Length: 381
Image 1 (cartoon, rainbow, N blue to C red):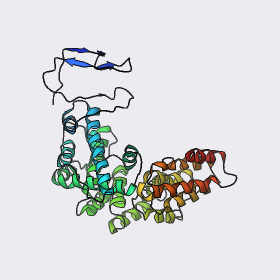
Image 2 (spheres, rainbow, N blue to C red):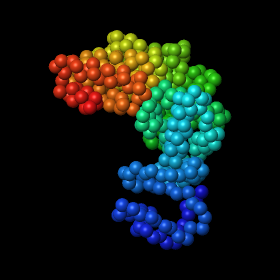
Image 3 (cartoon, helix red, strand yellow):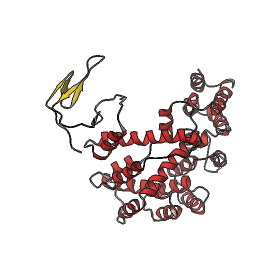
Image 4 (cartoon, rainbow, N blue to C red):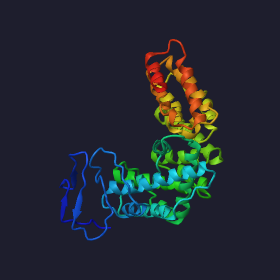
């Protein structure tokens, strides 16, 4: 777990830890290295580059546990999580139960409980790669339901493996004093809320999230608990009561109510299409209000992979109808919304055909604004 020293290097110039690449091909040899190292690259996020690295899983686990560079350590752990989720995605498509290495969940617990790391860093490290990020790495033949199932399975394994440690850490992070916006306090709240998300997957998780919601003294904690209840325990009494209480408390605050719409638009699953249609009839929703449209329709189409990409295409139909309705009032907002379908070719064939049809339906509308037509035609091209 310590940096390895070297005495000389050939093949490229190395200054202050930076390898200067000046030719199409370099072979860089370090001498004076007394033991096999695990290579830590791009330390400090030193350059805006994409690295393709063939590295053994053992090295990635070692770096994720020991690297002295925070970015490189995060990168190693995030790569392990991403690789595990892609493998699980393929197992699910093959009709198998996803299997994860036990040491991956143990490593998550080790990072989460490492008091030498700032709470904000631990919160970031424990956040699983997003569904859209995983889809981008897979590249083609995307089934959002399988990605979601893989991600949920890994989250559950991490929660079950670290049940006691996460529960104790969650309790220790409770802050009964007055709210403070400073960075240290914000980091503690972020870590406690990511732990709540994991613990909510365990038995009594809904009750824990409801207590968190009711005890919250600030918007960060209250909104985080509401999202956990709505996304993890949709339809339960705890979730419905929290949604109703949040709406009643903030119905006069437009920006906070946007958050209420946004949380519901992000609820995973096929039923969210119908929920979004219902919310469009809510007295507080207006198709002429760009912020309200973005909070509901924008979130649904860009951040809800399973709802938007419902296999029967209903999510695309709702989306196309709404974009065309918005376009009558605000072509720029409509054009921005339409970019949600820019990656339609990466979907599996069934969804791909339905997404293309939604784009074609928009393209054939007469007198379409230049803004929206440009996005739709370029997306189809």
